[in-house]
Amino acid sequence: MPTRHTHLLALTTLSALVLTGCLATPADNSASETATPTTAASSSVTPSPTRSASATASSLAPTASTASPSASASATASASVQAQPRANAPKSEVLGGGNQIFAHRYVALYGNPGGPSLGVLGEQGPAESVARVKNLAAEYQVHSDEKVIPAFEIIATVASSAPGPDSDYSDEATIDSLRPLIDEARKSGVYVILDFQPGRSTFTEQVKQYEELLKEPHVGLGIDPEWRIYPGQVHLQQIGTVDASEINETLDYLAALTDKHRLPQKMVVLHQFTHSMITNRAALDTSHPELALTLHADGHGTPELKDATYQELIRDLDPAIKPSWKNFYDEDTPTLTPAQTYALTPKPYVVTYQ
Image (cartoon, rainbow, N blue to C red; front, side, top):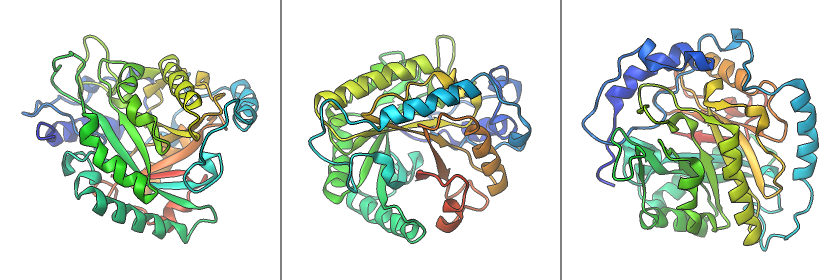
């Protein structure tokens, strides 16, 4: 996708905000308070270099977006519901065998086939990406009793600095442009997560456009609230946010699609690096047996700051939502090894590389 170049200068500026407030409360969510946004020449916004780990993560008090003790208690019941057999049994197993996504662990490469500026998936062709992620998964397998499944997290819609024809500040990749990577993954036993950065659109509106791909047994969903903005907002001037009610609407749609086509359980990755990115988080619906949810702690920096952010984000997390982690090749100082990553407590279910 030749129009999708980087906004590295702009995002370097914005990263100063996240460094001091990656676990900010909703009142701390404005980039204009700490940084002046820089306008880049291209239309698309490069995801994730903004996600610096917070130096103050461990000292922050829980906000309203974390689960209360009563919510955690009720979540135990929802976890048991999720383990119940489905009314319409799936026609096939999940990759790796069985009917539960998180009976296994996953190691993923992140990006878009449009180019390396959007992540490591754009650094090589589909077959080479398969080989690269399989080698990476093998490095983790020696540190895991569970089977480690290689995966891709493919950015399907890319946050944009321009409104575009539909005025949503998000560039939607065509299904044809994503097909080679998704088809290669299917042939090679690689799981796929389609990641969405919807701008002023809703997650459900955008996800429905990719139903053809989501009907594939090996394709799950990534929700990236960093890039969910509202009328009057533009990217790079604030960190995006989404309420649990909008996520639940998307989960309802995906669960119904999965049930209708008798697909194996689907993974749903919820990206987060500030509490304010997902409001009313305790209200997330974890009762769909067709779906397996994970909270993906996105943040780069030193291992100590990253772990502090991780621990804060998963505090009082519904036990039906599994914890996950992101490693950055260039921004982390240093990047954790596979052994160090799996030594985290709790051990992450999905480890993504950018």
